[in-house]
Image (cartoon, rainbow, N blue to C red; front, top):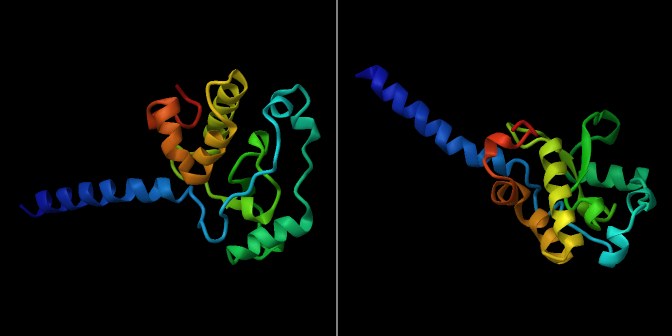
Length: 157
């Protein structure tokens, strides 16, 4: 009887934790609302676009981390763009956040989704604004819709 109650409690706890784990990938929308540059689709899809992107400046990195209460000199993790730079995301602190991989939603999974949405934008089957909004709202939900089962998220099929 007691073991059945413990088992049920464990299952409920895990079921409640899964959305929390996925939402942990999303930023605090007050600290990182997302910011994109004005870029034409033709330029974004042109060869060499990635090479034209500027690196994040020290002041941008510091400001983004300080918004999350992280001392920049102690941060050794990954600073990520909410809206990927390859989809027109800016280096503004409004678009930067510390990335904390949890579960299957890794940087590799986010990169795979970015590549897929960029292909759709360049093929004309998705607007750039819609692709950017997908990341601004919740990239993990978009991943599930676009890439399939969550178990495929880390690049393993």
